[in-house]
Length: 75
Image 1 (tube, one colour):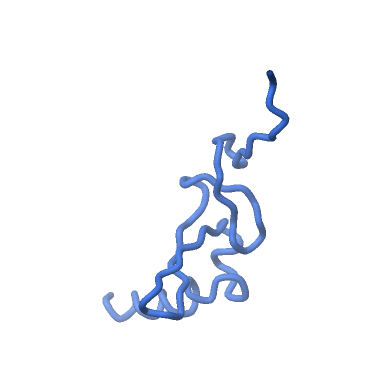
Image 2: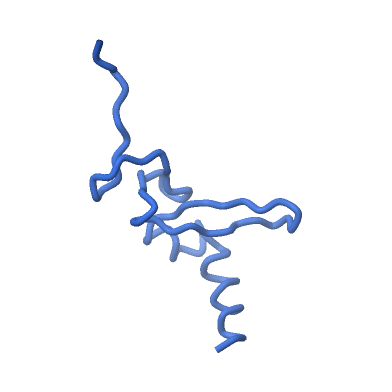
């Protein structure tokens, strides 16, 4: 019997179950980026972002506001 479910595919064609936390686009591990986005140090939350949403501070404040400043301390 054929399944009526759609198989979720990334833009590159890979089958995936991961979605961008900013826009909802389907992403594979190679096309998306993983960002830690948690305000509670006891609970770490991981989100996936497409390249566009990863650089948007309204959708991913940790990626643009915090990590770049932190990395600049070590360069």
